[in-house]
Length: 115
Image (cartoon, rainbow, N blue to C red; front, side, top):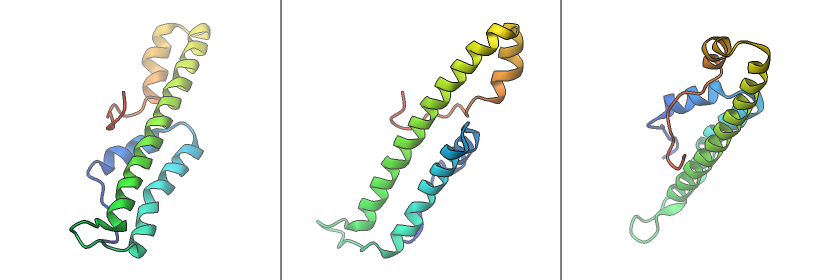
C-alpha cells in the first residue's frame, strides 16, 4: 500500500476549503498528503501478530487528521460567533443571519469524535 483514499474525502476537502484561515487550510492539506509520503517506506507486517508499520501509520494519521479538523472547526465556530456578535451590533440581525453568516459556515458534516 502506497496511497490512502478517504471514504469521506470529498466532505473533508469541502470542510478544509471552508476554513477561515489559510494557515489552517494549508496545515490540513499538508496533513492529508503526509500519509502518501510515509506509506511507501513503511514496512508491512506479517498479518498475524505484527500488523506492520503501514497499519500503525494509517491509524495514527487518521487520528491526527480528525483531531486537527475538529480543533479547527471549533476555532472556526468561535470566530464566527464573535464576528456575528460584532456585526449584530452594527447591522440589523436579519441581514447578518440571512446574508452574512451563511457564507461563513462550514459544511454540516460531523466527524467521528466531534461533539
